[in-house]
Image 1 (cartoon, rainbow, N blue to C red):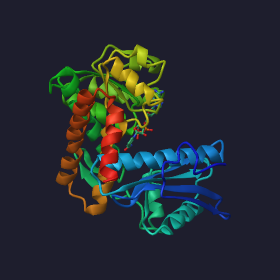
Image 2: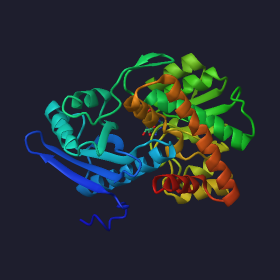
Image 3: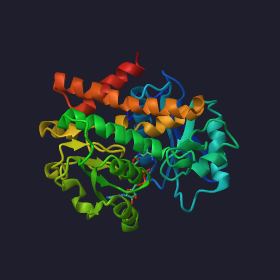
Image 4: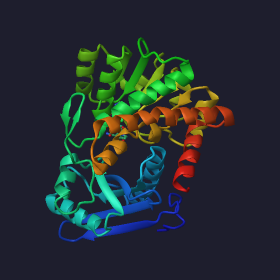
Length: 349
Ligand code: NAD
């Protein structure tokens, strides 16, 4: 298979293929860019249908991390790792150890964190064999001590990002009475719902697993709606917090919200969908800008955790978004395109 000429190969600095017979490890580590610092990014375990699919995923995801960290003003580059396998049946201590030892051989050029298919507990286990992991330290939060899980920080950043988008598109700072539809009541979505409720917002929520929505409905007075309707509600903000590619040819014509601002990764099915949202005057809040709270959290864990400094850094998502919105307005360009340009200016500097 072609690598250098592959569509997703975008000047990656290093791509490492790792295997270990004993544990069955088959993993790929990609360092996209390390101009700003070591490449930090999650370790994803997934039963990829083909090796090509795994390569494509790791290349695309590692590149995304470069943009995310640069945009969040972190001294980090972009990297990612993928393990080919089923996390439910193939993830053994031996496999995690082999993965950690492979990461260790890169001497800190790549730092692993949790992602789909790996947990904070897995990364903590790997920390016995390499110091080049992140997101493993327990720390205080406004709901008590929390594990290395970056989700609460991601949810807070998303909350801040929604405020910026509301200011830009609706012209006010008022979350009281704001109507928000949240797709996905997982770790991030549920905590976002908690914060929006506390700020007086009215909530509509959906999840493919109904048990996820019950608590939100009870505690925050949210209205539970079927998953197929959540993006088409007559609300102010649609907050995708579930899966990617949710903004596509089918959903965009049905959107009534004037703002799309949520934590999910890769929300645009294709980049042309960003232009389509702009054409319809729906403000799209670029996903990797608004969902950077988690990586900011992991970064602060590395430099010495200080909660006040962390919150201040995450609050910077507001200013980043305002800069993007202003340039998008002035240059008449989609917000996603402007975000990419700003990130490139930062990491290529
Ligand atoms: P999660 O797995 O805890 O929650 C996702 C929820 O979405 C689950 O409850 C799932 O049942 C639900 N869901 C899946 N498909 C759905 C659908 N079609 N309609 C409605 N609900 C659906 O994940 P999370 O950690 O809360 O992350 C949410 C999103 O944010 C993901 O896209 C993730 O990549 C992104 N993200 C998360 C973090 C983080 O710190 N956790 C950081 C950056 C980005």
